[in-house]
Length: 320
Image 1 (cartoon, helix red, strand yellow):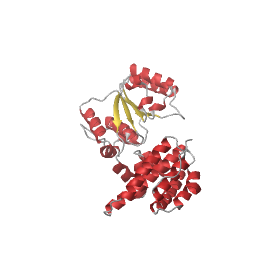
Image 2 (spheres, one colour):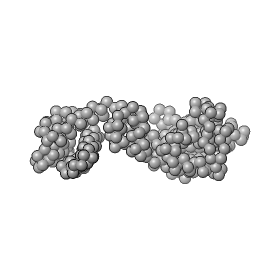
Image 3 (cartoon, one colour):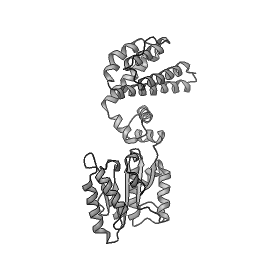
Image 4 (cartoon, helix red, strand yellow):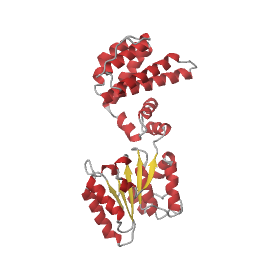
């Protein structure tokens, strides 16, 4: 469960938390920061289970079978509270309600844990209320804040938490996880090229525009590699309508680069030098920079086609 995920994906975080538990050095507040899907919430649940587990000792993992572990898994443990955004934000009333709950139980001496998911979404009032709570704690509690954007957390809140960074997943691990979800090897490689977030990769894979565009770029690359002038026409007939937004146009060239690099790797495995494919990759990188410098997509794509097919760019650049 959580322990295995952390061992495989965040070994340093896993070792750090285990060491803190073994030596009784648990902080009163943690700030878990990192990309979505890197294991922040798994670590929160693992830590809560380990602190309440009735079977684990020393640096052992929680058993996942005792009543406390099972209730935490099911989200039903009365001393482990999860706060998530109410709509677009975490509101001050949610933090006040949390404070009231902790005030009631604080005199009983039992440790309570609260996990604040997407902590960067606290509105100003909620953040100030939480800050006061951390500055003047009532009772015995552990606060765990999870965030994908640490820069949006008040510096004064950051200073009262022990920050733990969750590294992006390695491409190899991400590819394996995606393949385990039933995605093809090629699609898994493509997604791990575009993002290092598992959840973002899954989200992209389910996006209709992405799948249509991926197929279009595969066809475009086929024309380009064959030096077929249809590649030039394909820009006008398909790609212009497919990629109307600047972000979509940049994504087209990201996909293009991936498939060109895949072709280069294939040639290298066959023992071919791949001089032309290297030049094509260089040209694609230059084209991508032009797009980012606000050069018109049609001109960039058409110039790229001319360069690959004829070896000489003939279209003047037009800025937008």
